[in-house]
Length: 239
Length: 255
Image 1: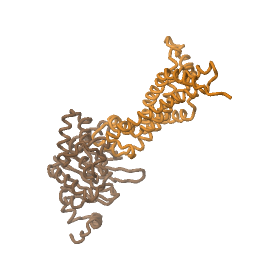
Image 2 (image 1 turned 60 degrees about the vertical axis):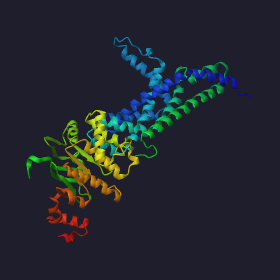
Image 3 (image 1 turned 180 degrees about the vertical axis):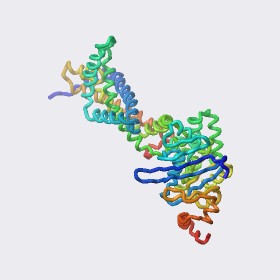
Image 4 (image 1 turned 60 degrees about the horizontal axis):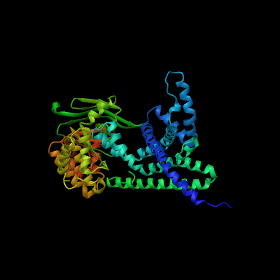
């Protein structure tokens, strides 16, 4: 009968905490870049821009239809090879192996989350009543003013709960980075366990760390929601 | 009528939604200081016409002119924005910016569109909120205001922009009956100071009292137009009489 080695588990937790910055780096940057891309995708699809709309539709379908793992491998293995094969024919000295691994991982995560976020934003756009948008046009705003002043603030507030859920998903998905040898939280735990085969203790340790991080995200979400409520946004009622 | 005064002109406005033709070539002329009231049975295309006048709906055919600026379906976005800035709209559902206070609602267009300094915009916004009787509601959010108060904010928002013409789309239709009066009295007071207005409404008394011109629409066309007395007492067209009979119970006796 194997006994749960709580001492080792605590040791792994301690070590994992020092890897939290890398995990947060991956999560937050992936989320931010994903959000920017998602906004573009959602607006293109909402406004029915010809051709681009179809391209993004296919993109969203592909990303949501395949595992993050595959996307990570494509970004990590395939795309660098493709880019290098082009670069080698030019006299540009840059090669993709100069890109840090963590940057490739965050690109993969950003691409992944952008598809999900774009659908959330699109849903928000659709649910946002036409009334305020029309009022904005009627006071003489241009398209870009309407997007900046009305659509973005509103839709983003409406979407806070969904965004929060997706940020948490990215956090968990960032654990896949250990497959490409990054020493973030999961990678660190796995390396420690490989010396004594106490994988269960090690992964329980990562669970604790991820859970704490998740609770922190939930807490921040709550604070943002409260702030939005004080500014007159009604989060309970969908417009 | 003096042609030089003509300020807003719509010519041959047509609009279809799918195979459903809502406007079949509407002409409308509004002079400076006019209060034009558009009446007609539901489905006549009144609201659609008003929305075309603001270019919230793009007319399929026809021309719109305010002062020297002419726009049509082929106009560029910039021309349309420029045209729109000469108009303002008051909506049936108020359409206030829900995350902004009454004051911020009025300031939004002044700051963003007219590029006024914040303190100047605030002064103007307060002046117009005072005008519609909301001097104690500057910092209230729409959700905490009654329908009548919200609509008055909507009117202040339109007035503050100093447009050439304000378009009212059934401004009292969504209000509880006891709140209609306060909105109409604000509209009366701004009509009296000479603001040019185009109003779609079902408030016949209001139309009789302050309209300088009444336009009756039916089936996507202008059936008849003239001053209030002509329309209400000597309607020439059968369709006008039919309509008036339905909305004014004692109409048959008026004749």
